[in-house]
Image (cartoon, rainbow, N blue to C red; front, side, top):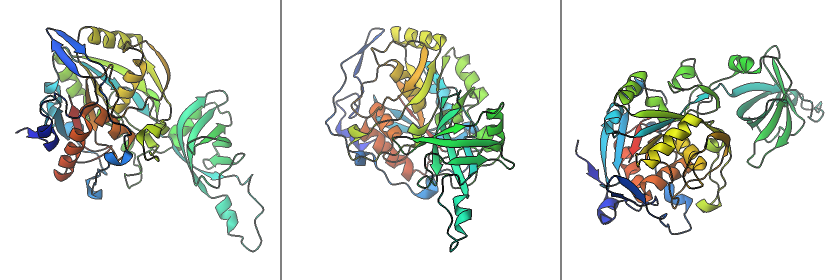
Length: 405
């Protein structure tokens, strides 16, 4: 495989990073020195992160072999990329690297219910069919639990325009769950309060559907419950998988650990922030939704030790990046704990914790693509995206991946 040098890289060869907004790094002896944050001309326009993707490039099915995907290897120092396979990933890690993964677990958060009709207007005798509409099917996507007692959730509702505060939604036949809309949010979401039941999550597991992304144009299947899940998923709470982790198998993880490379875990429950489109013209005007995260004492210790010893922190997925950078935003040292992360990373951001990233390919003009551009350099990454489109890589959740180092 011959590395391919991007046109942008050729024009910027004097710089180690091509148009990169990450902190400049200089290795002196065994120590990795961090220079001040790089600058980026403002404003950053959302349109700068657009690319054209044929619909047939969007993966509708997962590969039978998790580790069988293609992988584009981006080398920022050389300003070049190489077409590889994910099975080569363990060999690209360096001795001393710390690999960090997101152990969140997807739950069947998409529920189908019906309106109780409690808040609807009387049905006109001239239009009796309206009764079926007023008590018709409602799709609810649970995105984040606000409190356990009372059991309240932030959620997306469809059709949302007709579902107002006070409306009750019934789930199951016979009725197993009942929720009442008690509020609206800033992003169009609803706040739903469920009536108390002893086995709420057991009922959700039974009634719910895997919340496959909308660009997967098919109904979820039983097989998706396992396949749309990483092999190391443990902490229930996500409505979307941290998709970079879908490529890993126990064998691949065994190869990595067999080389003496440490693997640490964080938790970030993917919620509304992942689905939230960017509706502004200037990137700086976008506000990211909060998502719950947790970092253990052991993970904080491992990350802080790696940074102190100038070893690379390699993040699996943008959710891992957001967790580590949010927790390390005050100087880079991580503290164990939990909270709500809403760090929006886009070109101009200076990374404090993460040095390299394994990630899938993301939607045009999305916050996730902006994060990858912040680490790899916007021109470099966008050129690489054009290459993978032309090379017929598979895109998005069940698609191929990219390693940026």
